[in-house]
Image 1 (cartoon, rainbow, N blue to C red):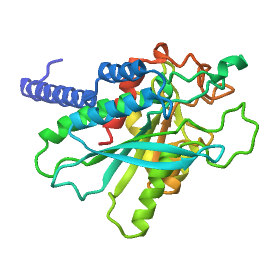
Image 2: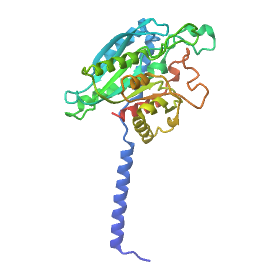
Image 3: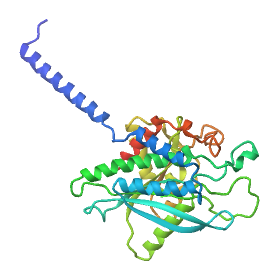
Image 4: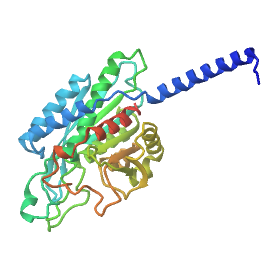
Length: 335
């Protein structure tokens, strides 16, 4: 059988055009948000060099000063929010929240995206099996430093975008490093305690924000927020946390869809977790800002958290560049 050469030529052109479309589509699908896991990893290492960042310690103060310097170097306008919150015994705890505002003159009054992580570490290793080891400080590589490390690299990328943006093309972002997230009631404490002993920094931030807004004072407007907590483990598993679903389901859906599109669907699971009291809870409940928690909570095991959680083994051996890259790209995809 013989085919007309004219039709062969047309078919050939269609084939080439189809191949080009397929190639261009494939190239578009592989374009990924700018993010360096190596950079995020180095930010985590630097925090660990200070030692445990327990509130009121020298390491905590040194780390706070360093964080302020890093945000300013990325082009942020930095605010240090000071205040007091009662701890689990009712005693006043000094709080230092660090806030980096990223905006251009053209976008200063636009709704912003809120990104947060806690930079303090737990004063007690109260998950240690040996009671005598429970009074050590948690090193906090994953529980604290990982979220901060990712957001510092995000800040570096935002700073570059802010410099390169033309006019109003930049999306304004606020990054908050919350203090005293991990000073909740230790397991070995048997005395009287107050409620809401965790996430003191975000309680202070959210309360101040709500009070100013209710008093018709000028405050930034936020479209939504993302909190990162324990986002560096090699076997990281991020389910859909229940408070995030309750308060910010649309944004949670948007973030998890982006994760799947980027190839991280196994890590960002569609499984629902129990509600977790984390900084996002108070941002949602008190400040009224829809906020999603990206937190390692593996519902496939008994405790949900890694076996080294709140122990002396929360160190750099439990930090994976692969996980940092995944979380960083997912966050950058929202900006």
